[in-house]
Structure formats: structure tokens, C-alpha cells
Amino acid sequence: MEAALAILHAQDVVAVPTETVYGLAGDATSGQAVARIFEAKGRPSFNPLIAHVSTLEMAETLAVFDPLARTLAEAFWPGPLTLVLPSRPNTSVHPLATAGLETVALRMPRGFAALLAGAFGRPLAAPSANRSGRITATTAEAVAEELGDRIGLVVDGGATPVGVESTILKVENGRIHLLRPGGLAVDEIEAMAGTDVLRPDKAAAAAVQAPGMLASHYAPDAALRLGATDVRIGEALLAFGPWRAANVSQALAYRNLSETGDLREAAANLFSFLKVLDRSGAKTIAVEPVPRSGLGEAINDRLARAAAPR
Ligand code: TXA
Ligand code: MG
Image (cartoon, rainbow, N blue to C red):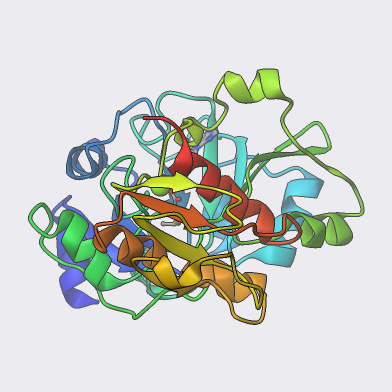
């Protein structure tokens, strides 16, 4: 904690665990710290960052919460939910972190990142701690592999329990728009809010609402073949559930996201298993179908992006 705070005060960056994935954190109010984040990640600076807060009070100094946004925050924070809300005119978040938008993405995480934001007393800008476009890091080892030569400290909190990034919602005029499916299932949000979560239509999605939603993302070196019901020569297999694709014995490498078909377990395993299979040297990773319900929406979203043409 002390070492991490010293780095933040020096306007540098530190990798820290949250309950979703590891983040690359810096002082969200410092242009220099935010610039360091973009530099270390190799991320285009038009892609805005999430500001992580330790309390709802801190969040309310940064953005305007309407009653619906406050209800969502009270129900699901701390947790794997990010809210995109109108920035307050006197917000302390540096414009580089919001890429000059009039909105800000806010999240109150669980785990070390929340403690750190609380001890620092300021919001922490933190994207996922991977190089831009690459597989998200869910362990400290994966962060070190991705960014070890570019950053001074990785705080090791073990494997992150949720395993996929937060669900991002934009709350506007009493409506909830889904910008990114993630670690909080949409049906849970709908049940709590008593209103539908609106999914982007294809045209709006094409306009890239959340710039991290660029088609190709989370890309392993191998190609991905989705919805696989067999294994072909030279392929590794990412399986799901108790049923097996045909010719499993010829898979170069094999991992099962969840033997029992549990979507939470599958989300937690997704990125680390993709990395393991990628390392096997297979040219292609065949991926068995994963249901789209609950956390399956986020899993299928990440798989589709990992499979997208580059
Ligand atoms: O679980 C998570 O959300 C992790 C952990 C570290 O908190 N963070 C994460 O950050 O996934 P990142 O930077 O990889 O993804 C944040 C996404 C990006 O797609 C970005 O474009 C979008 O949030 N975003 C940020 N600010 C936004 C805004 N004002 N409006 C719309 N999208 C925004
Ligand atoms: Mg990311």
C-alpha cells in the first residue's frame, strides 16, 4: 500500500487487482499520470478511462447522479458495474482521462484498488492492465508478462474472482443503455431497476459508443473458431460444460471453462485459459458454444472480439 501510494504521488502508474480484472492505476486528476497510463498501455488517447472511486460521496463530486443512477450505484457498488454519467463542471478528473467527453465513466471496485483509492483520497484512472488490444490480465503474472518492462510495481492479489471487465451502463433521461456487457449480468440489473436495459442497435454500435468496443480486441496470437462442434488438426480446444466436441483427442491443448457449465466459473477462467491455449502454439483455438444467458453475454462478447479479423 505504501509503495503504491508513493507511486501515485509521484504521478506514475501501478498495477492493482480489482474484483474483475487487474487495472493499471494512476491519479485521475493528473494529466501526467493519465498520460503515463496511455503510454504504458500503448493505448490511443481518444479512448477514455474509468475513474475508480472509494465512496459514493467521492463519485458525486465528479458526476451528476439522477435518481436511477443513484439507485444502481447503491444496489451494485462496490462491484463489477461502471456508470457513464454527465461530468460535473468542476470535476477533478483530468480531461485527458475522459478524452474530452462531457461524460465520465465511474466505478467503485472491490479489492485492493478500492482501498488504494480510499487511502489516496482521489479517483484512480485505471484501464485493464494489458497492452492495448491484447488479452486482459486476470493474474499478477499475466500483468508482469504484458507490462513488466514498462511499470515499476504490480500488486499481487491473486487471480481476480470475476474474470471479465465490469458491465458499463450509460444512464440518460431515465433510461439505461448497455455500452459493454460484463461481470454484472443484465438480467440482475433489470430485476433490480424494474426497467429494461437497452442494448445498442447495430448502427449505434458501429459508431463505437465505448471506444474499447473496437471490433478486434482481446486478441490472442492464434485465430479463434467459435461455435466449434469438432476439433480439427492443429487446433487447441476451449471447451464449456460436460459435453465434448468430436475428435477432442487430437486437440493440441485443452481447457474447459467450466465442467459443470457454470457461467461464473467460465467468466473467471476465460482470459487465463485463452492465454494458456495461445501458448500451446496452436494456429487456431476452437471454442465450443457458450450459452448467452447471464454472464454468457459478456463471455460471448469477449470471444467474438478475440475472433474478429485484425
Ligand atoms: O472491470 C473493469 O472495468 C476494468 C477494471 C480495471 O476496472 N477496467 C476496464 O477499463 O475494463 P478499460 O479502460 O479497459 O475499459 C473501459 C471502457 C472503454 O471501452 C472505454 O471506451 C469506456 O470504458 N469508456 C470510458 N469512459 C467512457 C465514457 N465517458 N463514455 C463511454 N465509454 C467510456
Ligand atoms: Mg481493456
